[in-house]
Length: 140
Image (tube, rainbow, N blue to C red; front, side, top):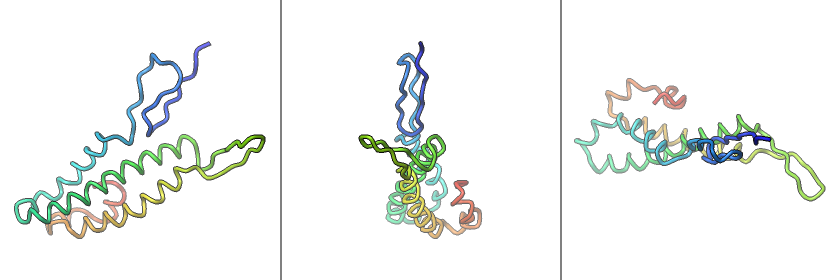
C-alpha cells in the first residue's frame, strides 16, 4: 500500500514516498534574502546621503526579514497542526501548547518594534507612502 505524503511547511522535509519532490522550506535563506531586498528598496535615498546610516539600517532590515519569514513558518505550522499538540510520555498522554505559538509570539513582538524603527528611519518621501498599519500587515 502506498504511503501518504506529508509536507510540513517550514522544515523542507517530506515524509512518505521518496520519489516525490521535497517541499521548499518557508524558513530558507532564499526567502529571507527576498524579504530583505523588498524592504531595502524603500531606503534607496539614504544610500547616497549617509552610507554609515545605511549600514545600520541594513542590519535592522536583516533582522526584520528573518523575523517575518520565521513568523510565516510558525504560522504555517499552526495552521497545519493547530494551537495544541498531544504529547505521549510512557503511558500518559497530555495536551500542551504547540511550540510554534511561542515562536510566533516572540518574533511578532520584536518584529513590530523593529518595523516601527524602520518606519521612523524611512526617507521623508517614503514615510508618506507607507503607513505603520500597512507595514505591520506585511504590505511593505
